[in-house]
Image 1: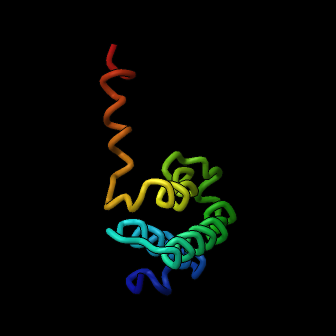
Image 2: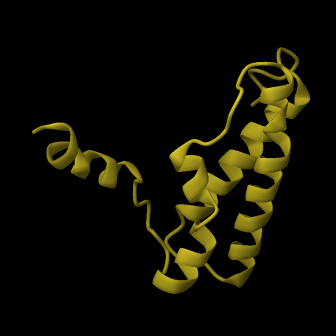
Length: 102
């Protein structure tokens, strides 16, 4: 973060910071209620600060599947436990042979 500080608007740094906070929290092997609160707070900060990309004309829309899936992490962790670094690209790569290759 310090490498880009001063070169980009502070809201972009806040957005990256919120995303990284979320990312590192959900990758923990053990999560408790306090961690779930931190995950939700980081996600709220990310969704609030990412609007800078629209305001600057960098991005028109934020309907990216992986960003959408972030809102379900806390509930899934409560229901199924810590994801232990599960990568969301597993399902993406699994469907390629069935959908994209006839």
